[in-house]
Image (cartoon, rainbow, N blue to C red):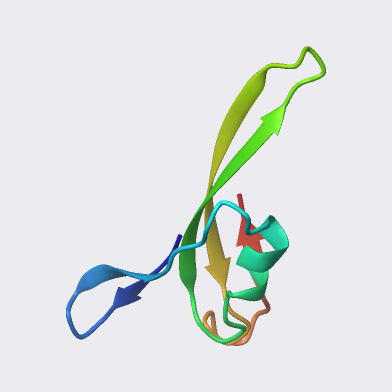
Length: 76
């Protein structure tokens, strides 16, 4: 799920939701280069002991120009 802050409405808006078949690469490709976004990524995996696990990542993406042109960064 990718979210943005709508300054006119003064609220967080869901911009995009992804399906279970979408990868982390699909998520990062959907983030714009010139604006901030907030994302939640649900990662399912199986351990070496054959145990199903889930990790949820909360990500802040700062677009290239969103912070005065200081560069693009991802925080997990």
